[in-house]
Amino acid sequence: MRSKSKRLKLAFGIGVGALVAAAIAVAAPPPMTVNTGAKLKVVAPRTGTTLTGNKLRTRVAISNFKVDCRYAGTANRKGIGHYHVELDKSLVNMFCGSRASISMLGVQPGKHTVQFIPAANDHADDLKAEKEISFTYQPANPLPAVKPLSFAGRRTFASRAPCTARRTSRATATGTPTSTRRSWG
Image (cartoon, rainbow, N blue to C red; front, side):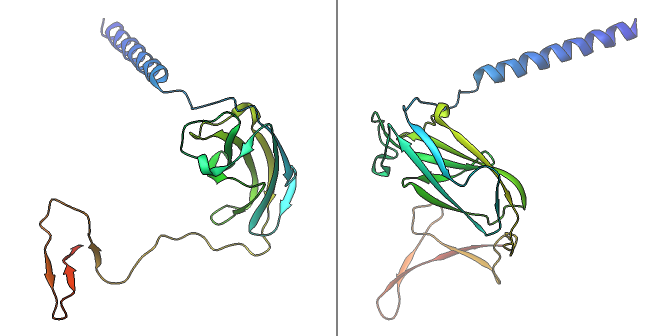
């Protein structure tokens, strides 16, 4: 009797888990996509390139689409936008010219991919026009590993924005106002 009860509880738990997972999948918003009508061609680099420097220089040719970053972040305009560059499916930046340069700082040597994706002004990607190339990064002189910033002494913070703590301003002997500094441990 006990094992049947345990099996029922286990089956119930699995069923509830599957139901919750399905609800989350359905509730997740779909990625922003658009059909810009752009035709994109990667001129450089070519798939299979071995990069020995620390910058990946790219060049694209885009037709049926005007690349103009003045409109980025504004309402969509048919046939106008920019393009996104992703390194290994992670956004590097948006670009507005036919040429770009991508730093390899923090990138491990080995095989990688670069994606070029036309985007509307609201940054929705045109995945139908996406192009991808693969390359091998074998730096002759690798860049140093990225390290977190650290500063000697106590950390201080000067605020010029309103906050809940009382901030005072006082005049110095020269009459120049100064604001108080907040510090944390």
